[in-house]
Image (cartoon, rainbow, N blue to C red; front, side, top):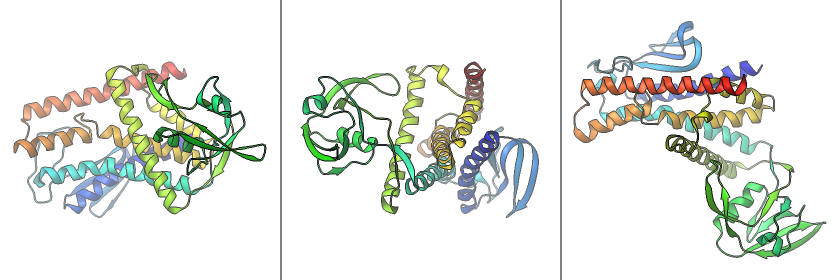
Length: 349
């Protein structure tokens, strides 16, 4: 069952990505020959709207083949009126951005569905108070349930963290303790801690840790939209930073995962229900969108760079440079794929 879920989720993410390219290309009058989910021999093909829609044997990806665009022969051109080559650089960029953009939109939709559904989050219940911390000095105690900070209502532990991070003034924290309401006053302290990349950073903290208590929440329509936007933006920022830290060496190459890791994450999520699967799908959709925007030739980001160059200089890159950079791009991608599989084998076998 986990394998089937993995294939369905991955195929859906690829489908939306390629649908973004397809939709804008057709809107701009470009002929699209093929729309394939997967690579290799075709298992199913149906022609519709002048395009062959296919499901191929190896479902780890997909492609849209447009008239005039040849990834394997980047110098090949076609000057027909319905060709990709006849578009302006800006129009081509619209087509290229539409794929990753569709993944961000899909993630937003999935996060919205989760937000308006009954789902569990970590409650704002204190599990531990650090000695000599602002919380300890103010009298905050284990099992206190934080319900309000200043004029902000607190529902989840995430709400608590956001308010503390964004507030520079004194914190008037209202807690529920033994069915009684108390208000404690404290000021967050800039504290040395570690971020998710294990870097030493300073962060405003009051010195508490959460209790392992989950609560069920759901948002209304407008709050759900806002939550979906925040989740999509936060996931995008996290993945961009992760790539940056990987390139700079902060994150070791051994942390790079491949298709086996993705399959395991999706399989584990599916065992925890539909909402957990949607949450992982949303994060993977953002991941797919971000990674495709990287300025690597053979990815959408690489093609965008080529078109930006043409917009600025009013000329296309030379055939020699185009071929060399495209080959380099494919080498980088294949290298990352091999590294991911190698790490997966060491991690799980």
